[in-house]
Image (cartoon, rainbow, N blue to C red; front, side, top):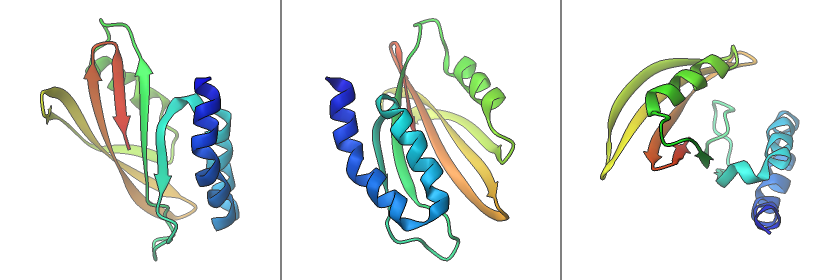
Length: 130
């Protein structure tokens, strides 16, 4: 049931994403292949002068309670593709939750940009807002 709900929820943004530019089809395919990964995936349909896609996504991962944010961050850094680099990393608080703020520099096809990622651990869940 959850899979079905996520697919319905993501169907409209995926369809629209495919119509913007052909190079966004890879992003759409990744979302289609992993619908249960995303709690939310949305984007601005107006592409700015940078040619980057402004978007917001929220992902929830179940982890063991012993997994710390630092452990999770280390795992993320090992898995980053070469076109992404952590420029800044700063621990902080969002309301009552410990968090980490990351700034990721991107360079894809000579187009540079930034991603801002907030990690929040709540019990056995790590929430990632990108």
